[in-house]
Image (cartoon, rainbow over all chains, first blue to last red; front, side, top):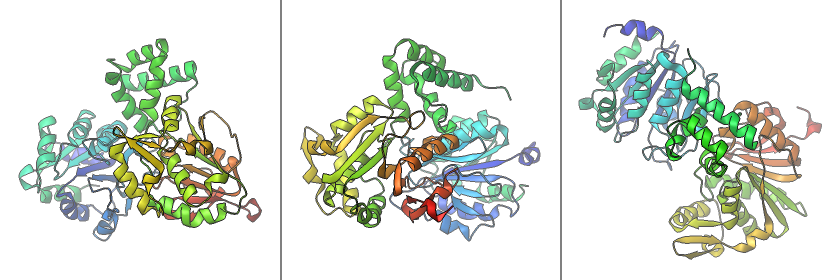
Length: 194
Length: 278
């Protein structure tokens, strides 16, 4: 955990990706986010496109921070949790502001974890924390590698503790993670963020 | 932080395309443009964006392929069925009051949305007095749109979307299926003008009662969005209608007050009556 505290001090944004099993994981992580969190949080989950996104409703009551679905060109607010809307990629642009796209699915997924993580790594560099959760495909591996490459902090849910370990295993295969943790350990880390 | 090679190459390529061909990508949303362009070199047999720039400058045929690569979003007929349902229920009754109708589909790509609107208008008995201007920056894409030919394996989802949009005819009335393709009825062409037009560099060409421009504005930065929405405002008749993508918004731009909500959840707006102020 060398330097973890120093790293945490500089985090301006947290990106989170997952698919199968990730809703349950978020139910543990999002309540752990401190009320006065300085970082903004961006989340991509793979969901069937025909389902209207209920994520915002599910998590609004469980989280002490504002939770909303990302809108195109919306200025990023500190301490806000943004979910990518179903069937759109979520990216981050200078400002910082949110940007959506209907480009091709990546790893059969739109929104894609890779797309969010890569654009966030480009914008936030070392001021970014990337978290890969339970999930059933390799989306997110390239994205987490980009976060790592830009000097950001990378966290992967311990594959043995994930409902579906494929996403975590793929990420770890692609690049080293700063931390491989259980959900409770990730929650504990989030609780200490400024 | 030092500017990375890729950011330098990207800017040079965009400038080169503008200087040589007057296609202006300088106002595109940077993150998604960068994502596409980063993946482009390998597609064009190049190692780097600099090599791709060389190819674009010296082999003009590369340009149209690159334009397609940069601008063709994946789309479908009656995408977001509730949008078309709202047009049918909330906008069509007012369109009926006009003796002749002009409609602009801006950024029509390969035409799925154009035919969706034409079918909707035919079902509502309005197509015979309507003219649809379907515009895009890419001539190659416009040719595809004009041909109205789609892969047969997409037809099932088009049909389902059409049904959910409140369509009261069968989609199969409007196309002929053969050899794995569905060819849409040529008679639609009498009511559609396909034309080259750029929201970044061109101006208004007609007065229209309805503009549909969906999932195009998300590819623009805020300044270019303001320009495009300004063009729409200028092109719309008194109390004309504007439909944009379900996740697009007028709220963060310069023209937020120039339109009023008609069906906010489906992003259908109406040009504000200037006499009402605002």
